[in-house]
Image 1 (cartoon, rainbow, N blue to C red):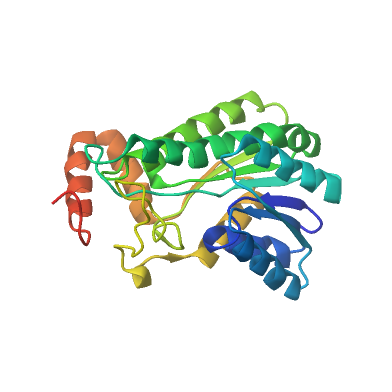
Image 2 (image 1 turned 90 degrees about the horizontal axis):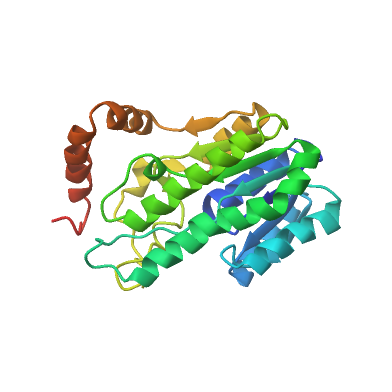
Amino acid sequence: MKDKVVVITGASSGIGLALAYKFGIEGSKLVISGRNMENLMQAEYNLKAKNIQVVSVVGDVANQVDSSLLIQRAIKEYGKLDVLICNAGISMRALVADVDVDVLHKLMDTNFWGTVYACKFALPHILKSQGSIVGVSSIAGFRGLPARAGYSASKFAMHGFLESLRTEVLKKNVHILLACPGFTASNIRNTALVANGSIQGESPLEETKIMTADTVATIIYEGVLKRKRDIIMTSQGKLTVWMNKLLPGLMDKMVFNHFAKEKDSPLR
Protein backbone atom coordinates (compact mmCIF):
# COMPACT_ATOMS: atom_id res chain seq x y z
CA MET A 1 0.00 0.00 0.00
CA LYS A 2 3.00 2.31 -0.23
CA ASP A 3 2.06 5.67 -1.81
CA LYS A 4 -1.59 4.62 -2.15
CA VAL A 5 -4.03 7.41 -1.30
CA VAL A 6 -6.47 6.33 1.40
CA VAL A 7 -9.51 8.28 2.64
CA ILE A 8 -10.83 7.19 6.05
CA THR A 9 -14.04 8.58 7.56
CA GLY A 10 -14.56 8.64 11.32
CA ALA A 11 -10.81 8.59 11.83
CA SER A 12 -10.36 10.66 14.98
CA SER A 13 -10.72 7.66 17.31
CA GLY A 14 -11.36 3.94 17.54
CA ILE A 15 -11.20 1.74 14.45
CA GLY A 16 -10.81 4.73 12.11
CA LEU A 17 -7.74 6.02 13.91
CA ALA A 18 -6.27 2.51 14.15
CA LEU A 19 -6.77 2.16 10.39
CA ALA A 20 -4.99 5.46 9.83
CA TYR A 21 -1.98 4.25 11.81
CA LYS A 22 -1.91 0.88 10.05
CA PHE A 23 -2.18 2.21 6.49
CA GLY A 24 0.10 5.15 7.30
CA ILE A 25 2.85 3.02 8.77
CA GLU A 26 2.70 0.87 5.63
CA GLY A 27 3.40 3.97 3.53
CA SER A 28 -0.05 5.11 2.42
CA LYS A 29 -0.93 8.80 2.04
CA LEU A 30 -3.93 9.62 4.18
CA VAL A 31 -6.93 11.90 4.22
CA ILE A 32 -8.84 11.52 7.48
CA SER A 33 -12.17 13.03 8.48
CA GLY A 34 -14.25 13.47 11.59
CA ARG A 35 -16.78 15.83 13.16
CA ASN A 36 -14.82 16.85 16.24
CA MET A 37 -12.15 19.35 15.22
CA GLU A 38 -10.10 19.05 18.41
CA ASN A 39 -9.96 15.24 18.27
CA LEU A 40 -9.21 15.23 14.56
CA MET A 41 -6.38 17.76 14.88
CA GLN A 42 -4.89 15.68 17.70
CA ALA A 43 -5.11 12.57 15.53
CA GLU A 44 -3.38 14.37 12.66
CA TYR A 45 -0.62 15.62 14.98
CA ASN A 46 -0.01 12.13 16.40
CA LEU A 47 0.06 10.54 12.95
CA LYS A 48 2.54 13.10 11.66
CA ALA A 49 4.72 12.39 14.70
CA LYS A 50 5.08 8.88 13.23
CA ASN A 51 6.19 10.39 9.91
CA ILE A 52 2.86 9.51 8.30
CA GLN A 53 1.73 11.73 5.45
CA VAL A 54 -1.76 12.90 6.37
CA VAL A 55 -4.22 15.74 5.95
CA SER A 56 -7.42 16.08 7.96
CA VAL A 57 -10.81 17.41 6.90
CA VAL A 58 -13.40 18.34 9.51
CA GLY A 59 -16.88 17.38 8.39
CA ASP A 60 -19.98 15.25 8.91
CA VAL A 61 -20.42 12.31 6.53
CA ALA A 62 -24.18 12.73 6.88
CA ASN A 63 -23.81 16.08 5.11
CA GLN A 64 -23.62 15.67 1.34
CA VAL A 65 -21.55 18.83 0.86
CA ASP A 66 -19.04 17.77 3.52
CA SER A 67 -18.65 14.39 1.85
CA SER A 68 -18.04 16.02 -1.52
CA LEU A 69 -15.45 18.38 -0.05
CA LEU A 70 -13.65 15.44 1.59
CA ILE A 71 -13.11 13.68 -1.72
CA GLN A 72 -12.22 16.94 -3.46
CA ARG A 73 -9.54 17.57 -0.83
CA ALA A 74 -8.01 14.14 -1.43
CA ILE A 75 -7.80 14.76 -5.18
CA LYS A 76 -6.47 18.29 -4.71
CA GLU A 77 -3.82 17.12 -2.25
CA TYR A 78 -2.65 13.94 -3.93
CA GLY A 79 -4.15 13.87 -7.43
CA LYS A 80 -5.76 10.44 -7.07
CA LEU A 81 -7.72 8.15 -4.76
CA ASP A 82 -6.97 4.45 -4.29
CA VAL A 83 -8.89 3.37 -1.20
CA LEU A 84 -12.05 4.73 0.45
CA ILE A 85 -12.83 3.37 3.92
CA CYS A 86 -16.36 4.19 5.08
CA ASN A 87 -15.87 3.79 8.81
CA ALA A 88 -17.82 6.67 10.40
CA GLY A 89 -20.79 5.41 12.35
CA ILE A 90 -22.97 5.75 15.41
CA SER A 91 -24.90 3.16 17.40
CA MET A 92 -28.00 3.10 19.59
CA ARG A 93 -29.54 1.18 22.48
CA ALA A 94 -33.29 1.50 22.87
CA LEU A 95 -36.43 -0.45 22.05
CA VAL A 96 -38.42 0.55 18.98
CA ALA A 97 -41.44 1.18 21.23
CA ASP A 98 -39.46 3.77 23.21
CA VAL A 99 -37.09 5.42 20.73
CA ASP A 100 -37.64 8.82 19.13
CA VAL A 101 -37.96 8.57 15.36
CA ASP A 102 -35.30 11.29 15.07
CA VAL A 103 -32.78 8.86 16.56
CA LEU A 104 -33.52 6.35 13.79
CA HIS A 105 -33.11 9.10 11.19
CA LYS A 106 -29.75 10.05 12.69
CA LEU A 107 -28.52 6.45 12.50
CA MET A 108 -29.52 6.16 8.85
CA ASP A 109 -28.10 9.57 7.96
CA THR A 110 -24.67 8.73 9.35
CA ASN A 111 -24.26 5.00 8.79
CA PHE A 112 -26.10 4.60 5.49
CA TRP A 113 -26.23 7.97 3.76
CA GLY A 114 -22.71 8.76 4.95
CA THR A 115 -21.54 5.68 3.06
CA VAL A 116 -23.63 6.51 0.00
CA TYR A 117 -22.35 10.08 -0.26
CA ALA A 118 -18.69 9.13 0.13
CA CYS A 119 -18.98 6.29 -2.39
CA LYS A 120 -20.85 8.41 -4.92
CA PHE A 121 -18.24 11.18 -4.92
CA ALA A 122 -15.27 8.81 -4.73
CA LEU A 123 -16.45 6.34 -7.36
CA PRO A 124 -15.09 8.09 -10.50
CA HIS A 125 -11.63 8.20 -8.92
CA ILE A 126 -11.81 4.62 -7.61
CA LEU A 127 -12.83 3.43 -11.08
CA LYS A 128 -9.83 5.23 -12.54
CA SER A 129 -7.38 3.72 -10.05
CA GLN A 130 -9.15 0.32 -9.98
CA GLY A 131 -8.98 0.70 -6.25
CA SER A 132 -10.95 -0.40 -3.19
CA ILE A 133 -14.03 0.66 -1.25
CA VAL A 134 -14.38 -0.69 2.28
CA GLY A 135 -17.56 -0.59 4.34
CA VAL A 136 -16.86 -1.09 8.03
CA SER A 137 -20.04 -2.85 9.06
CA SER A 138 -21.24 -5.30 11.70
CA ILE A 139 -22.95 -8.63 12.25
CA ALA A 140 -25.98 -6.34 12.72
CA GLY A 141 -25.93 -6.04 8.92
CA PHE A 142 -26.72 -9.76 8.67
CA ARG A 143 -28.90 -10.30 11.74
CA GLY A 144 -31.14 -7.67 13.33
CA LEU A 145 -30.26 -7.05 16.98
CA PRO A 146 -32.82 -6.12 19.66
CA ALA A 147 -32.60 -2.61 21.10
CA ARG A 148 -30.48 -1.72 18.08
CA ALA A 149 -33.09 -1.64 15.33
CA GLY A 150 -31.86 1.63 13.80
CA TYR A 151 -28.26 0.46 13.84
CA SER A 152 -29.19 -2.89 12.30
CA ALA A 153 -31.33 -1.23 9.64
CA SER A 154 -28.51 1.14 8.69
CA LYS A 155 -26.05 -1.74 8.35
CA PHE A 156 -28.51 -3.86 6.34
CA ALA A 157 -28.90 -0.86 4.04
CA MET A 158 -25.12 -0.42 3.77
CA HIS A 159 -24.77 -4.08 2.82
CA GLY A 160 -27.43 -3.82 0.13
CA PHE A 161 -25.92 -0.67 -1.32
CA LEU A 162 -22.35 -1.98 -1.43
CA GLU A 163 -23.42 -5.37 -2.75
CA SER A 164 -25.33 -3.68 -5.56
CA LEU A 165 -22.37 -1.41 -6.30
CA ARG A 166 -19.99 -4.38 -6.26
CA THR A 167 -22.12 -6.10 -8.90
CA GLU A 168 -22.30 -2.96 -11.04
CA VAL A 169 -18.50 -2.65 -11.14
CA LEU A 170 -17.87 -6.38 -11.50
CA LYS A 171 -16.12 -5.93 -14.85
CA LYS A 172 -14.25 -2.75 -13.82
CA ASN A 173 -11.65 -4.42 -11.57
CA VAL A 174 -12.84 -2.42 -8.55
CA HIS A 175 -12.63 -4.09 -5.16
CA ILE A 176 -15.43 -3.71 -2.59
CA LEU A 177 -15.03 -5.18 0.89
CA LEU A 178 -17.62 -5.52 3.64
CA ALA A 179 -15.71 -5.85 6.91
CA CYS A 180 -17.64 -6.95 9.97
CA PRO A 181 -15.77 -6.80 13.31
CA GLY A 182 -17.10 -8.28 16.49
CA PHE A 183 -17.72 -6.00 19.47
CA THR A 184 -14.66 -3.72 19.46
CA ALA A 185 -13.01 -1.60 22.12
CA SER A 186 -13.85 1.78 20.58
CA ASN A 187 -15.87 4.88 21.36
CA ILE A 188 -18.93 3.91 19.29
CA ARG A 189 -20.78 2.20 22.17
CA ASN A 190 -19.93 4.90 24.70
CA THR A 191 -21.43 7.45 22.31
CA ALA A 192 -24.40 5.23 21.36
CA LEU A 193 -27.74 7.03 21.43
CA VAL A 194 -30.50 6.06 23.83
CA ALA A 195 -34.26 6.45 23.36
CA ASN A 196 -34.38 10.25 23.61
CA GLY A 197 -31.25 10.84 21.51
CA SER A 198 -28.88 11.50 24.39
CA ILE A 199 -25.54 9.69 24.65
CA GLN A 200 -25.35 6.38 26.49
CA GLY A 201 -22.03 7.18 28.17
CA GLU A 202 -21.03 3.87 29.73
CA SER A 203 -20.80 0.74 27.58
CA PRO A 204 -22.72 -2.29 28.89
CA LEU A 205 -20.00 -4.63 27.58
CA GLU A 206 -16.91 -5.93 29.33
CA GLU A 207 -14.25 -4.06 27.38
CA THR A 208 -11.49 -6.52 28.34
CA LYS A 209 -13.27 -9.36 26.51
CA ILE A 210 -13.72 -7.74 23.10
CA MET A 211 -11.57 -7.02 20.04
CA THR A 212 -9.07 -4.19 19.97
CA ALA A 213 -9.25 -1.52 17.28
CA ASP A 214 -5.68 -2.37 16.26
CA THR A 215 -6.66 -5.99 15.59
CA VAL A 216 -9.60 -4.88 13.45
CA ALA A 217 -7.38 -2.45 11.52
CA THR A 218 -4.82 -5.15 10.74
CA ILE A 219 -7.51 -7.54 9.50
CA ILE A 220 -9.04 -4.85 7.26
CA TYR A 221 -5.62 -3.84 5.93
CA GLU A 222 -4.88 -7.43 4.95
CA GLY A 223 -8.36 -7.71 3.43
CA VAL A 224 -7.65 -4.73 1.19
CA LEU A 225 -4.27 -6.17 0.19
CA LYS A 226 -5.87 -9.51 -0.73
CA ARG A 227 -8.97 -7.82 -2.20
CA LYS A 228 -11.32 -9.95 -0.15
CA ARG A 229 -15.08 -9.77 -0.64
CA ASP A 230 -16.35 -10.12 2.93
CA ILE A 231 -14.68 -10.52 6.30
CA ILE A 232 -16.55 -11.69 9.41
CA MET A 233 -13.93 -11.36 12.10
CA THR A 234 -15.13 -13.61 14.91
CA SER A 235 -16.20 -17.23 15.19
CA GLN A 236 -19.30 -16.08 17.08
CA GLY A 237 -20.16 -13.77 14.18
CA LYS A 238 -19.69 -16.52 11.59
CA LEU A 239 -21.84 -18.89 13.64
CA THR A 240 -24.54 -16.23 14.03
CA VAL A 241 -24.75 -15.59 10.28
CA TRP A 242 -24.79 -19.32 9.49
CA MET A 243 -27.41 -20.24 12.10
CA ASN A 244 -29.59 -17.27 11.19
CA LYS A 245 -29.90 -18.69 7.68
CA LEU A 246 -30.60 -22.26 8.78
CA LEU A 247 -32.52 -21.81 12.06
CA PRO A 248 -33.92 -18.26 12.15
CA GLY A 249 -36.59 -19.02 14.76
CA LEU A 250 -34.05 -20.47 17.14
CA MET A 251 -31.78 -17.50 16.56
CA ASP A 252 -34.58 -15.12 17.57
CA LYS A 253 -34.63 -16.77 20.98
CA MET A 254 -30.84 -17.04 21.30
CA VAL A 255 -30.26 -13.41 20.35
CA PHE A 256 -32.99 -12.23 22.72
CA ASN A 257 -31.52 -14.22 25.60
CA HIS A 258 -27.99 -12.97 24.86
CA PHE A 259 -28.92 -9.29 24.86
CA ALA A 260 -31.31 -9.66 27.81
CA LYS A 261 -28.25 -10.50 29.92
CA GLU A 262 -26.59 -7.14 29.22
CA LYS A 263 -26.20 -4.70 32.07
CA ASP A 264 -29.41 -2.61 32.36
CA SER A 265 -30.84 -4.33 29.28
CA PRO A 266 -34.08 -2.72 28.04
CA LEU A 267 -35.29 -6.25 27.18
CA ARG A 268 -35.83 -7.11 30.84
